[in-house]
Length: 75
Image 1 (spheres, rainbow, N blue to C red):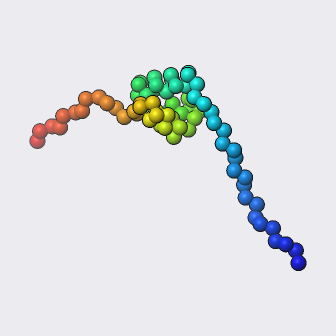
Image 2 (image 1 turned 135 degrees about the horizontal axis):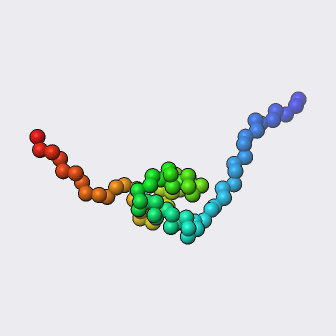
Image 3 (image 1 turned 30 degrees about the vertical axis):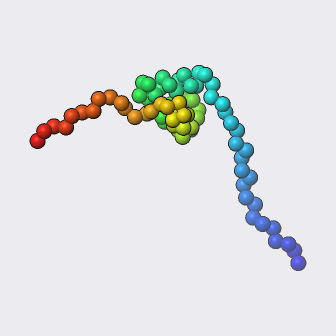
């Protein structure tokens, strides 16, 4: 009796770590400061949006606007 073979599964790709260069960090900081969206920064730096957000969090940068709040109109 022939032995049944298991279905082949895709082998996981080995993860490669790309360290952040000084130029990438500088463009990340200026992008956040100028109000550029994380998606656009990710496209420019050839990184994922998640990687951009994680690094910004690690550098204590925020993509949220920190301008003065609008006062509610009295009704």
